[in-house]
Amino acid sequence: MIRILAVDDHPIVRDGVARLIGTQPDMQLIAEASDGREAVEQFRKYRPDITLLDLQMPNMNGIDAIHAIRAEFPEARIVVLTTYAGDVQVSRALKAGAHGYLLKALLRKELLDCIRAVHAGQKRLSSEIAAEIAQHAMDTTLTPREISVLKLIAAGNANKEIAAQLNIGEESVKGYVKNILMKLSANDRTHAVTIGLKRGIIDL
Image 1: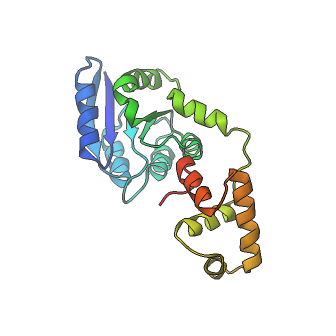
Image 2: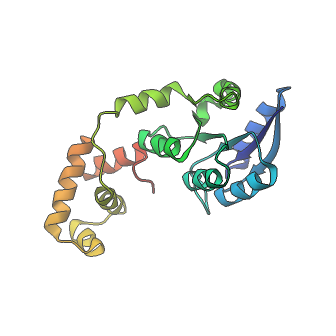
């Protein structure tokens, strides 16, 4: 019997997962959690075989929850369920120790196979996600400072305000913005923010 913990801040998603798992003779949903912190507590309590985990959650996000769980339980097998296929976000989750990554839109089609594959020791990505990673494999990544600048652009700050908040000169900010546009192949600041959000480089 594959024992499963479902973690998502939307009860409707957890209900859908519970119904799907409930139809399978070899699976059992043993616990649920609605945020990352609760996920760590429930993992300690129940030690599930597979944890299904959303990334965008209050109190502690999914990436931090993966780090926290695997720091205590290195053998933990975690499958990320998310709405987003952004390659940077996927890479972060896999580096943190996730074994699978599925889009919520494909749960009905792929979840049960994914659970069995990860339980058997395999890694599993949706084909859409694998394609997204391949598309950006050769891209130059943004530096931590460039990501900070992009976040401040997304929050609606002008160069002068960004310079003040980061304690750097306005010319430096212009240089960072130029690099960001070039690396993301963006036409302007708004386009850069859109790409950053889509790829999971930043979130709002």
